[in-house]
Amino acid sequence: MQPHRRSASSLIRRSEWRGKMAVTGGFFVRDQGPQGFRNTRNIISKSVSSMGLKNYNTLAVSEPSEYVFQVQLNRPEKLNAINHDMWLEIKECFDELSEKAECRVVILSAAGKIFSAGIDYVDAMKLFQEFDESMDVARKAKILAKTIKQYQDSLTAIDKCVKPVIAAAHGACVGGAVDMLCSTDIRYCSSDAWFQIKEVDLGLAADVGTLQRLPKIIGSQSLVKDLAYTARKMFAPEALTCGFVSEVLPDHKSLMDKALDVAKQIATKSPVAVQTSKLNLNYSRDHTVEESLNHIGMRNQMMLQSEDFINAVTGAVTKSDPPVFSKL
Image (cartoon, rainbow, N blue to C red; front, side, top):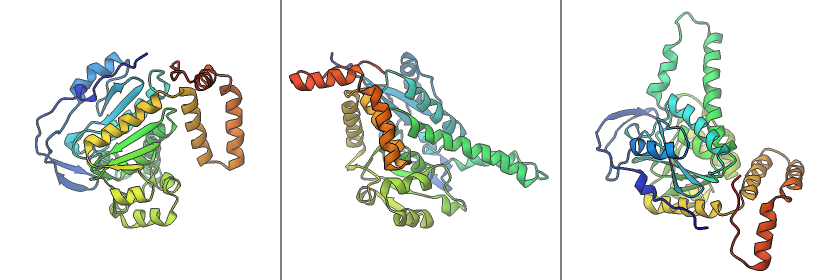
């Protein structure tokens, strides 16, 4: 069975650029959109409806290839700054894709000139406007704790999505964007990408995943502390050297081509095998070797009885065409 393919470019349209000032990531940036500035919100809505997915306000969801879904951060006019709605929609979207049988792998990318300028601080300040001047510090802390946990859960939904998530990052990836990328499984970037743990410049510590996940990704406490304490930019070559990204591509087109090519390869594999592999890799990250061996042993007691294993082994032995696996 030949997979049905649709060009991702058919799902997007160009949008007229308007120069605006966006307050994002703790700094002022004048948006001067490059050629190819894209706003996918309007054109994607019909596609999303046909796929049985919710139409999101801050995300654009498409299906560029069979079993491959693409989730784009879609606030290019605000440099994809992460506002409250986006935090909530990221969790909802990845929870939905995690359960969707027609999805086997997800590409996470962004519309516009950069990946993301991080948290939308103009939006975030609205939370503090809710505080009464006479409100006790404990009452304020309770409100903040709820919001912080909500945002943490949003990015944890990417990590816990049972489908592999491939990140394709270009341009600036600041603050919360680094937290988001740390939640993905495979990361690629274009040569113009740079990464910055910005929070220390704003008088706070990163609190939605970078400090917890990045040390385990790159395996160097020294480098993580260097980046976190200084808020310096880590450019694409250094990100590749330290293992934060798997490959640096020369431009945005080749970046997206690479992400889609790898996603297509994963989509042809047994979803039982791929999803079990992700579950155990994530479990092993947070547990001992012995505990992790017990975990995979318990799961494979069931998975080795799956039709996927029988069909794959039969195909390998008989040297026939690769099997077509059922939805999971």
